[in-house]
Image (tube, rainbow, N blue to C red):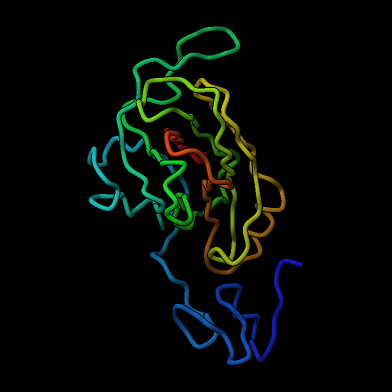
Length: 217
């Protein structure tokens, strides 16, 4: 069961709010009928983090791309070389700057959530993922578990696309968007799909994980 509706909630709060005994709890509109965002929704998403200050993300996140960046995340330069484990070839999975999170910060949800996106013309989402120690260039076999999830109802429910584990070297993921995501998007009159990278378990204080070069295409 993904949702439980109680009380009087016309149109089930338009899939944009929480149904309670007092009615719909909404950001805008009595029954959440108004979309929270800027129209039209972007069709493509390309985030390298290279246009952000090399500092705490609260000092300059790209709000055109992100709905929320939380959990003590910050922008850091990455090492110059990324090694492909399969064939020992140097590839730029991570380059320039990347978004880093402290895995043991104890600061609530550790996550990055995109703004709503129009996925009508997209087929895949790709990104680089890496786990390091506090020294950004030191490899580690210690693990941090991070999931990529998506939502169609502004975060009321989340569906998982993939769970990622550390493999010491940076990894490049290229994920085909599932059919049910495309179908849900086509059925909606307003709004789109959000993605989030979220840490699913607490880890040691000297571990960090990062994402970079995110593309929806």
